[in-house]
Image (cartoon, rainbow, N blue to C red; front, side, top):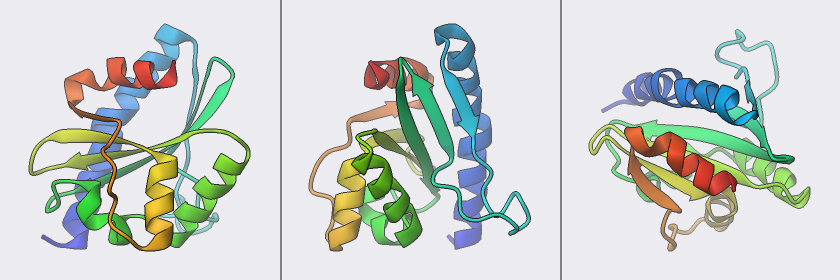
Length: 153
């Protein structure tokens, strides 16, 4: 499959799976959710956004970056291609401010979502080695809301 197919599944993952769940959570749990505009949707006029979403729950801000693939079963196998140097830099600065971040990875092959600690993703992407830790959670999309609430608490 091509990068174009991964871009399509990535847009599907964000728009049809993650955004509706976060919008529901925002009203249920009194959290702030900001879907950040990326350079693609803003016509290449803005700088790169630090992540796809910023969520603030219980006075803790989280960066959330979504990744998806039609080919790969896990973020482990596509880390170097999926996470850019700019994303690493944004998340590293976020972590220096003592705020957490998450990477959500959707595999079209398995229809499962991996939820990764952003510090683990940044560390292994930074050193150029395969991720040798497990994701925080491996779930199907029906479990996304309840699992994110567990992570946020």
